Image (tube, rainbow, N blue to C red; front, side):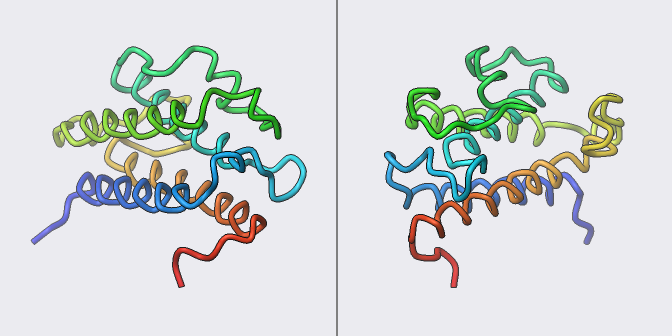
Length: 165
């Protein structure tokens, strides 16, 4: 029996989202702009950034229309810098809604790729992220996992109890 890379990628993306949502559920909404140290990524930026990234991949690779507001590129996109003010961001509930909805769209698109599509290399500007579509799921999960590590530091600095162990 063989396991396809696509199946592994799907499972990794589902697991990373479930884990991150578990960590997020325990953070009081008024602490979503808390930075563990000055300039650190905070929970609200992390969630918006991952939603923006998922949306970017759907636009770039699947040709989908953006599902998030255009202003999010400046707020959450590559090179954006988090601020400690909730006034600089959309409401937490809106960001979380997009965070989960865009991932569902990404999973539906990725899960529907056939073997020929999975073997296709990513466009040149994304080649450093994954060599082909098959590897994309694993690297998307890795990206979210890296940011989940940042989230755990924010939680720790808030004095919240660990979720695991």
